[in-house]
Image: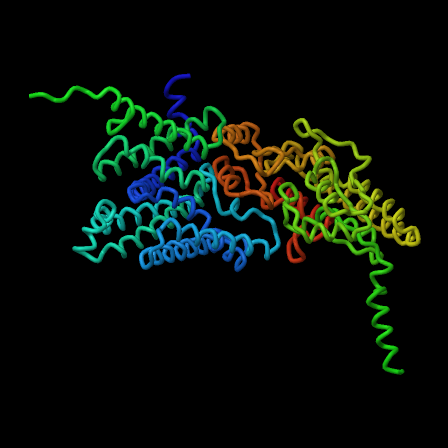
Amino acid sequence: MSLYTALVAPFTEFEFMRRALAAIIALSLGGAPIGVFLMLRRMSLVGDAMAHAILPGAAIGFLLSGLNLFAMLTGGLIAGFLVAILAGVVSRSTGLKEDASLATFYLASLALGVSIVSVKGTNIDLLHVLFGNILAMDDQTLLVVACNATITLVVLAVIYRPLVIESVDPLFLRSVSRAGTPAHLVFLALIVINLVSGFQALGTLLAVGLMILPAGIARFWSRDISGMICVAVVSAMLSGYAGLVLSFQTRIPSGPAIILVAAALYIASVLFGRVGGVVRQLFPGRHLEA
Amino acid sequence: MRWFAPIIFAAAMAVHPLRAEDRLNVVASFSILGDLAKNVGGDKVDVATLVGPNGDVHVYAPAPSDAKKNADARLLVMNGLGLEGWLPRLVQSAGSKATIVTASNGISPLQLGSDADPHAWQSVPNVKIYVANIRDALIAADPAAAAVFRANADRYLGELDALDAEVRAAIAKIPPERRKVITTHNAFGYFAAAYGVSFVAPVGVSTESEPSARDIATLIQQIKAAKIPAVFLENLSDDRLIRRIAAETGAKAGGTLYSDSLTDEKGPAPTYIALVRHNIKALTSALGN
């Protein structure tokens, strides 16, 4: 098999592969920078928690208008925002840590969601309907994903300075500006829209994975935040592309394939990363001499 | 003492509710069997179903209220052929004393992979066997109403014969080289065998497994190569994938085929006969010229 048939032909021959690639690129642009900030703020597991928080909103959307994707997504967004913002407000105004208050709210939200679904009485798997497949990108889904990436990048640019300063030195930020709390809340909202758009395009595993794993990879290749963001975006795109090719050549389902490639990249980075990689620490290079 | 009589009467009603007394409690595992049991039992039975309209019988999780339905039942109608893997445990845990009827007894099962294909009700001749099994079980459970059950079953079997003829006539109008479709769920093996329409499925027997990029690509090539004229969505699986495949191959997206469950009253397939009629109409309009 030539290199061309292995790596390029799947995309030239099949439109669904091109669409999947486009979706991956858009999701990487939006999700990977978010992942970097999540990691810097020690909130890497928040993605998983938020995934569960979205359920009751989707369930209410389902109750109101049946199996309507738009209604369920809107419901999911509202529920996600509510949980994120309530948790943010509680942790900012009381002594409770962010992770603890988020855990409380998402568990309550999940319980509510499950109850609402069972009251309705049918057992169609809501999440199955809500969560799409990367191979089934229709125009509407692609548009949602692209809009989401655009919004994320623009908003991140606006709140970049307070967000960065708060990630590294919150006390300093508090002494010079009051932008910390609003920036944090906006950031939580960004997490939610990225998750919801990721879910309906890819499913839980992939949406959260494509956000968090590239950030972990980036940590081993760059010391400053802008460098990290670049590495994260590139490695997310690379994992997406390689995962699609892997899924095309080996019959591994696409979502897991993409995450497996990202995980392999992560392990390689842990071992060989330029910044704090294991090999680097065991065999430090010679000091530069004049 | 005149005030006393109504109270005694009410108490007697409470102990022996008149209507429920002479009706047989029947539980069916899913909506299609429930419909068959209602048709044969008529007003001599009360039919409850465990997996109701639009529910997916493959991935069903029983609720406590279902255990209660089972505990009250005299007769439990199940499909068999491995469809209701969850049922034996439910019966055991509910402490049910119901007689279990396997409606598919006596049909010749098709293979699906290494297991028997459970979706036998997609062929009308098989359903006639289902109906006969249900009739015999009802008669055994309530011999006093035997005549009613026989009359109901004969009437319903007549309707099924007419339905079978209708399906064959409709298929005969489709040109033989166009009698093939793609659907998400390969629940139509028996339909294919009985009426000569081929069904190709992108996902395996269960609604669980997730396709890889390779699977989708193979399928697209297959549709193009075999010139399959129509792709069908099913009421249970994610349909975005099928629409994508349809867009990519130029095949017609032919609407919904109902396979494992009836719809509710307002839907297009509230009874078994309506379900078959709906499916055959969808097939002929997508495959006909």
